[in-house]
Length: 216
Ligand code: DX5
Ligand code: ZN
Picture 1 (tube, rainbow, N blue to C red):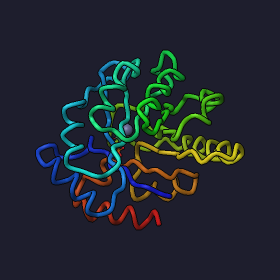
Picture 2: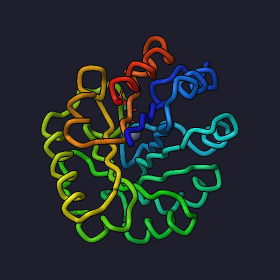
Picture 3: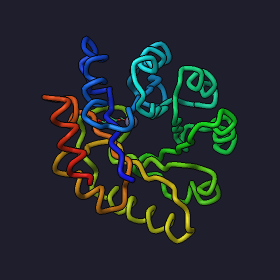
C-alpha cells in the first residue's frame, strides 16, 4: 500500500497541532519526524518533548527518522514517546544489528536509512529483519532540496532486490519529493512517500489530498 508521510520539518511550528490535524484529516497515514543532532548532520531539529506532544494529538503512524550518531542510545526514549516506526542510518550505527534488536524488542517497526552514496550492499545480511528501507533522495539534514536523480536507480535496484528475495519490505523515499517528482519515485518502486515542503508550503489539507490522489 502507498502511504504519505508528511515531514513536519517544513511545518509552521506556531501552528504545528493545526497543521498536523489538517494532514491527518486529509488522509495522511504517517507523520514523518526528523531528529537531527548537529553531529551526524550539521543541523539540530527537535526531539523527545515534541514527539510525545504530537503523540497525544494524532492517530497517524509516527515515523521517526533518526539523523543522529550512534542512534541506539536513544531508541528506548523515542519508543517511550510513542513512535511507531524508528529508522536509523546504517552510517550512524556502531552495530546496526544491535540497533534493530532494540527497535524490535519494543515491538516497533524497524527502518534503516541509507544516504545517497551508501551502497545497498550495506543491507545485504539484515534486509530480512527490517520492515522498511529509507532511501535518502537528498543528502540528509535539510528540507527543501532537489531530488538527486541517481537515487531513482537506487530505489529501482532496492525494489528488485526485495522482490527477488520474496520480501515485503517497504521502501520509503525522503527528500525533494514534490508534485513533479512523485510519479518518478512511485514508478521506481517506493511506497512510503515523505514530503516536507510539498505538503506544508501552502494549504496543507489541499496539498495532502492532491498527493494522495496521485498515489492511488
Ligand atoms: C531531510 C529530511 C527530510 C525533509 C524533506 O534530511 O530527512 O525528511 O524534511 O524535506 P523536503 O520534502 O522539503 O525535501
Ligand atoms: Zn526525514
